[in-house]
Amino acid sequence: MQTIKNLFSYTAVLLGFAAFAFFAPSCSDSDDPVTPSDAPVTGIKITPEEITVTEGLSKSIVVSVLPSNAADRTYKLTSSDTSVATVEDDKITGVAPGEAIITATSNEGNFTATCKVTVKSTEPMIHPLNAFSQGALLFYGTNYGTEGLSHNWRIQLTGTGYKDAINLTGKGDALMFEINTSTDYTTEVAPETYTMLKKDETVTEALKPGTAIPGLIDGTDGESPIGTWYLFSESEDEVASAVNDIESGTVEVSKNGDEYTLKFDFLDEDENILFKGTYVGTLTYIDVAPQPRQ
Image 1: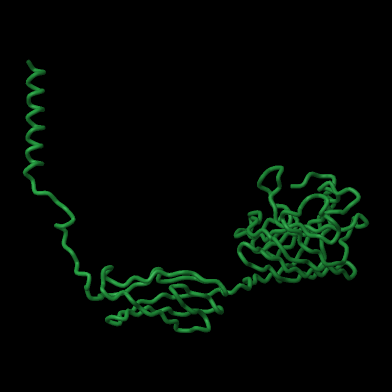
Image 2 (image 1 turned 180 degrees about the vertical axis):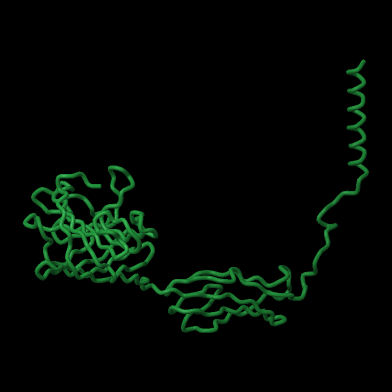
């Protein structure tokens, strides 16, 4: 009996719901309020309101006349400084480094909206490194398997915020770069200009004299930086961390007595930062060739 009673009650609920659905007024699109197609313009907007464009390149913006069904949805675009940025067909083009304001004005009502444009240069940002006061010259020999081809060297430069240039413990800027000389050199670096290899060129047979190694991660442990890096530390008690991997550039090496002159131009292509500077001074020589690279 209980089961039949429950079934009866359930059936009654279903019938009641069906009746409500039959007699309830239907809702359709025809019942929604309709905004006249000749609605007057009430405003205009630009998306985004701020934009950064590289010199010589373009980015698009979206201009919206309000409301969306306004009868006159036309507008004009102007630039406050066409020597910095121009605009045409909703596309902003960077002309020269600087800032400009793009203004959209509706033809009906003269409503306006603006977009601030910053044009950045294709020239890299220069990070000067001229405060190095100490250096280390680490001889790795044929550590990369370059027997008969070249000898590998690492030069490390630090400022007065570091205890020394060997352990890289200290505060401030630091730089490390690796170069390859002929096998004739075992206690000093050959005076010449060393050119950075491309990352996809760093195979053993490419490590010829006169080349430099770009910033890489040691494949043996998957974390140690090797090659050429800009490093930085915020604490005197910390080892400097590798920050920017260098991908191109040169270092010019000359020597007068025990004093080296190193002129370097190293570019982090991804961040578009040029690390540029000169070091004049001695380099503490350390022979680490028999030891595994750290």
